[in-house]
Length: 130
Image (cartoon, rainbow, N blue to C red; front, top):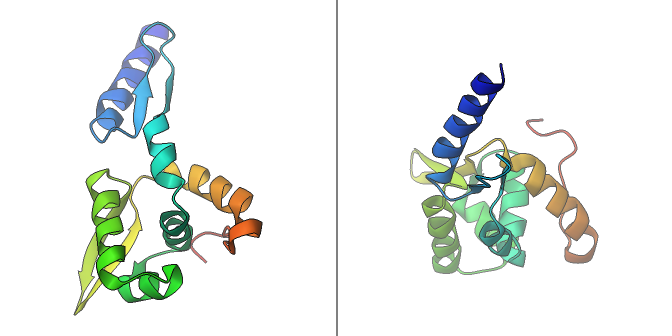
């Protein structure tokens, strides 16, 4: 059973570390969130956009209005988040809709939104998907 659990953890690590979101401590076998991603999530406008995406898909226009940035700036933030596998995009007619890609991130995003929300005008969604 222990060997099977280790194999499952290792499979998770290989799957997740491809995007760099998760790290793995070989000595302890623990999988943990990469600290470099905490810096990415710490940017106020990116966090505001990610908090919105925690509620469901969001259009670029909606994220521009929410973040108070130019469309070009929001697109650059979204490209960086896509490159790091934090968000995914799909086309819907003329619009691009963005959503959180890794469901394991939702708890982290929600906690950050909740902690930072009062000071930065963010609000965690207590009922995601509603």
